[in-house]
Each structure stands twice: as C-alpha cells, then as structure tokens.
Length: 313
Image 1 (cartoon, rainbow, N blue to C red):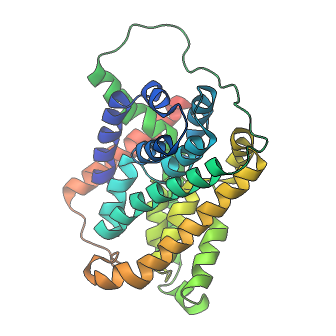
Image 2: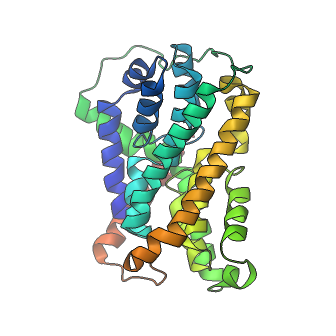
C-alpha cells in the first residue's frame, strides 16, 4: 500500500492548498439542499478523520451552516479521503475503491436531509477555537502542500495507521484462512457484527483498509468488510459527545441510524449485485510479489510515519 499512500499524501497536500478550511466554511455556510449536497460532496476527498473533522464542523456551525449541512459533512468526510481512496484501490481493487466514496456521499445526503428535516433538538452553535497562533510569514503554496501532505498528515494518522498495519499483519499471520467463514454465517450476521465493531472504535479511513483486507482473508465477505470501512472511520465513542453538542441528542441518534442503514445496504449491494457482476475485481486473498521499488516506498512511508509522529509528540 506504500506507493498508493505516498501518492495519496501528495494529493491530500494539494487539496489542503486548493480547498483550505476557510474556503470550505465559506461555501458551506447556509441552509437548503444545495448546502447539504455540497457539504457531502466536498467532504469525500478531504483527508480528515472522525476526530479531526469535529473542529471543522464546529466552525461550520458557528458560521451559520445548517444542522443538515453540518451532519452531511460530519458523515461523508471521515469515511474517505484522497489518500484512503488510492490505498483502497491498491489493496481492495477498483470496485470497492469506487463504491466507497459513493457510499460516503450518499450517506452524507441521507443524514443531511434527515437531520435538516427534523426538529431542532438541543444542539448549539458551539464556539470553536480558532486555529492559528503567532502570525508568521505565509509560505509558498507548494511548500504548504508538501508540508501538509508529508509532515502534518502523517503525524495526524501515523499512530492509527501503524496500529492498523500491525493488526492487519497479525490477522494475516495468526488467524487461519476462512476462520470467520466457518464460525460466522455469511450475510446479515457478519454485517451486523462488523456494524457493532465499527461504530464505537477509533480507526482512520486509511488504516481501516489493511484491517478490512485482513478480515476478508480470514473469511469475512467483502460486503461485511465494507460495513467496517464505513462505520469504523465515520464515528467512534470519543466523538459521540461532540456530535451531541453540535447536532443535539435527537439528531445524533438520527445520524447513527443513517450510518447503520447506509453501511448495511452498501454491504448487501456489494455482496449480492456488484461483486458477482465483476468477479475479477474481488479483493485478492493471496500474497502478491513485492518489487524492490515497493520495498523502498514502504521504507519511506515508515520513516515518514514514525518521524512525524515522534515530532508531533
């Protein structure tokens, strides 16, 4: 996954310069279905995790964005990012890489309309700490893109990504092939299990990909793994209280319901219709040959993750 992720870091850096947080807040402030659609669409490529998206959502709410637009942004943004889409393509194949951002966008629309049409609840336009600090001379755009893509972003997701790689490696080395297939019935039972696992845990959209591949190799269907890919990054126990503050308790319950519904339907569609129509695009369950260039990219990736994580600490 290293070559895809390094390229994804570069794309994420460009997006940071081309779509800064201030631009996002300016264009998503407002009400109506257009704000919901824009919030869901813009959130898909942004490389923000379920915790990192919270202060951005607070800023949107403070600047007048509707609860529906904020809910859509909160739903679609952490599920995917430019880097995670490329990693998904490299590890799980093009079909899942295409289905994943589509599911993120549709889930954002669903929760945005559901929350926007509901009663106001007890959410507040919470105050958010302004990002910034000591004024500095602005860097050139290419330097800001490189710094965000290859310093800030690896520092933000380094710990979670290293943990995800370790979990995936343990799954591949210790768990026998088809262990889950022999013990967990395929279909809804497996998807419900992944739903229960994915909602409360913290895993970023990129780190969830190797874990999903490990689950598939252990016998979980791609549809059940997709449920994990949607619910794992979308929220976690630590951010539920923040969601309640931004959206209100009733809207947070609607948010979780829409998340569960989208994940289960996407998993079912993937297993029943999409992958049977494209059997050659199913995720590979054998170990491919690793080239010298890929080993070199892996060394560079590990260096970036560990160095920037230590610098941030």
